[in-house]
Image 1 (spheres, rainbow, N blue to C red):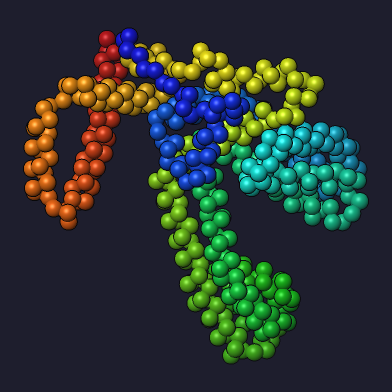
Image 2 (image 1 turned 90 degrees about the vertical axis):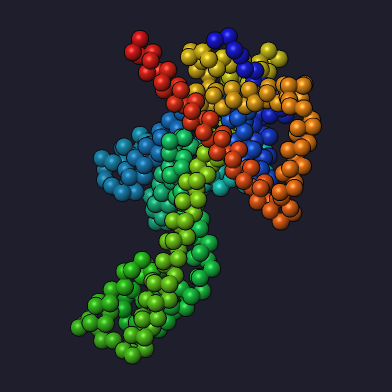
Length: 432
């Protein structure tokens, strides 16, 4: 019960740096994100998340309030244009304006901390687009017809932004990431075959110019993209009594080529590619969750430690808020002492504590071996020579792979045994 584990988090935090997750982001940027699965990194991110999640909950509530007021203002101003709704629009005008100004100030704080990091993240560009759309529709609403277009785009981007923010929750992060990965892959796939789609849209425009769906090049391109989903409308085009088909032979052959090349050949690989990427994403879901945790923590740290906040009137409140997210704000908080055998230990998850305990015990065993508790050097040498006698250069790599697989299997078996032992202990405690 008195056993203690000392977790030293100083190697993970850069010296004289306010952003304690900077090393985590650097590992992700240089392609070493798998290092976040180390038990020390997982413990560090878990402790940081417990300190930062209150700010994250406030951010989610802020976005919810903004989307609610923004949606109400757009609907009252641009959808139901009546005398009763004009008064509601005037009431909602000021809350939307205040929240938009607060969002703009928040983005300015993030830009001053690191403009390069800010530009790289597409979520920041989405937030800026929502702010710009909100400002445009707030300036003399309904004075110009094109403000309806901006309002439609703005309300869509605002709800997408809310979806991205909710996706930072651990229970929803994987599903939002599936959506973004499938969308990005779809754009890459579509850009590679966009010339083929343009060619078919122009050919349909020439052959079916008397139909409204193919009256112009742009509307014909939109109709062709919609036809990729299987909405061909064969009877409406080829068996319409009101409009005669001008080029029957060529039109039939062109539609058949479109069905074979686009609907069958092009669409099916696109769907298969998205599904295969989702399966790969499920396999590395744990790593992606850690990466998203590091990004969220870094996002709020950048905002809290911005240089412009030092000149704000509420500087003392900000200074108090800055102490909460930091783990190394004093020399006494460099280490975390955990009691793995104490059931009251709740600072880290139980599974993570068991893995830390196993890692520390293995490290202690290795130290004991090096100090003289190991078998005699001659026996080790003889075993090594026997292994070399039965292995040549060709199968040495196979032996190394088998040894690595055996180590992984033994590690998994030990973890499973620990979990079963804990379950048995819990059952016995309940019976007692």
